[in-house]
Length: 287
Image 1 (cartoon, one colour):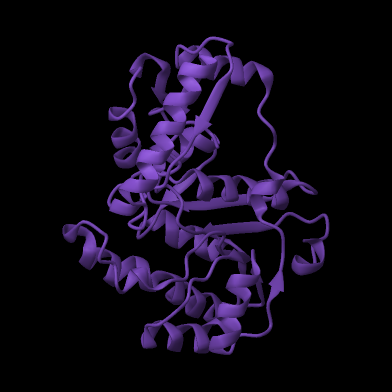
Image 2: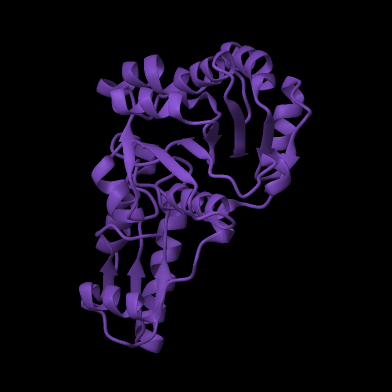
């Protein structure tokens, strides 16, 4: 990390932009890891994070966040000397072919969310900001406009790091070869304390018995056969071992239907025989 940033002990001002505040535990875990990495050697570094939901992000991370398209965002951009873009699966065709979003949000995503990343690349270069595309995930890109933007604008970044070989190969197919494969930032998360864990169990009215934790993604390819099979396994565990089943949604996206895991978890719950032995976690917690 220090080699990438050429860090010394001087204070740096970071502006972090990604899909934060969309209630995805995995994405928030990545952000937590990024914060830990960039504050590990210098706790005085100034970090400003752009979020879609200020209340949610501040509660989850106990950190200060700013909104997109606000004066604070513009101010933070000019005060920062390093812009960090990514940290999740920001690069995909969903911004242009977002068939799975609520229709009323479709135009918003096409007009703003899908193009803001590329605008930040351009303006960061114009105003001589150091740009890092950090630990990004890249799906297979089919859209010609997306390929054009990646091929012509990604070279503006000072460094491009990816979190898996799949993303690295997808970028190479477009012509972006100067990438560095790094470990997922979420690995740098600090483990939860026993005190905090006990508090969560108390909040959810859970005792100290043994549990089986299940998390399901509300994916379009997740069929009824797979769901029924998992339900049978859960019913067997309950009857055989008297273990409680804890259902945890990893995503509760405000308008992406395939990232609203409570939909599939509620279907799962309805099929359980002994519902008293199943608990769905609905409150927001730090990942």
